[in-house]
Length: 533
Image (cartoon, rainbow, N blue to C red; front, side, top):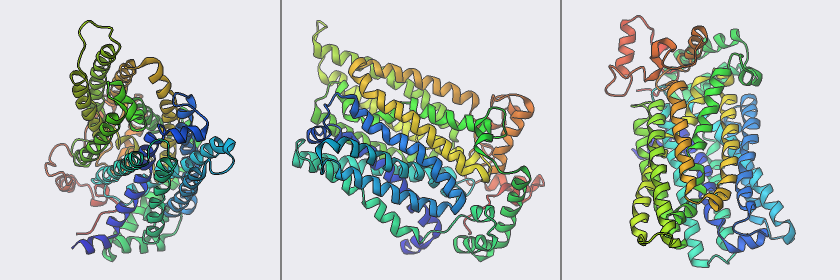
């Protein structure tokens, strides 16, 4: 049974994509304890409170932004699968450069580390742009969210693997040993090795093959993944969709980035999704977890173990993300998540203030650590779960659902570029804000989450379980009606999932049957690529 499942191409795509996404998670967890290694800081020639700590972490995101643009163009030119391969190779080279930083002339260590971070960012940013598109183009319409959520659960697995590795080597070797920070970097090579070995097993997406005029190869890909009986129906649907796009013309970055152009509206939705995700503050929590627990009054060792527990809880709770994302929708998860995150950070600000006041002796009655630390830990754990369920996946998923095929990789690239710059700013400023604002940083995150929730409620359409073409129809209707408010476009139809009524089993079958009664052909409602029964 398991062997047969592993031979299934859909399963192989999810496993491969999950491994690629886990590579990004590993980097986040890897740097969180490397930043506090004394040998690493000495080798780089910086202090623990130096702004360079944040710069080394954040330049990676600039590399991600550039890598996303390059990879998206390459994936449109040569294909999704070759794009993934090149990105993996680039990330591997950058990781090796980081490992060797400081082994040569000492005065070059910082420059080598920064170069390695940027090059690795090029590869990982490319993966972040291409992999969601690759997965989305090979998934059913009512399963795209579940597939990507499962892959992002692997992202948290990578984060856990890195942090556990860091904790083990740090406590075995000590914070003054260079191998306590070099070993986690080298272990990261496990991911490129696995990805290289799996690349040859994967199909190219039939959508891209049709887009590139390779219909015969598209037929071979469909037969390999979905069975020979599916070939004629699927190739006809894909060809017709491509002909519609050809009549509209190819989409350029100018069409996406210049106000008033055809793809400006979906691009704003894409940009704001990533900006708002960065404003939730969880890029900072992932990288600077131990320091955040320190603000709640815990010592260094306790803070590290509590961070590890938070990451493990994060991984477990991500299961609810892929359970809920197709049942409740992207928009519901985002708005609800922002609301609870705002409340959580406001409470953390209060508890952090009490903890620091107690430590500094500025109040008459000393407050025990457990009185602030335990509730603060519980709230931070729950807030992390809320972020994982509500905000980790949708900002990456929505751009793969709202653009035409000729702009899907470019839309994902825009998403990664904005994510890169937003997280560059957050991870650069976070250590500075830690040193100057202490617990008041939590209050800033409470406000930014409130802003993120309000914007999403007003302007982000629900794209779940709809076909790519149906999602593009929202933006056409918005232009015709002269409004971007989701409440006003098409009578508020896009505020919720289209199958919210009459699809209690979550499969979409009731909706398809209703569509047949309404005279809608199967091809207009059913996914273009569907696993055969």
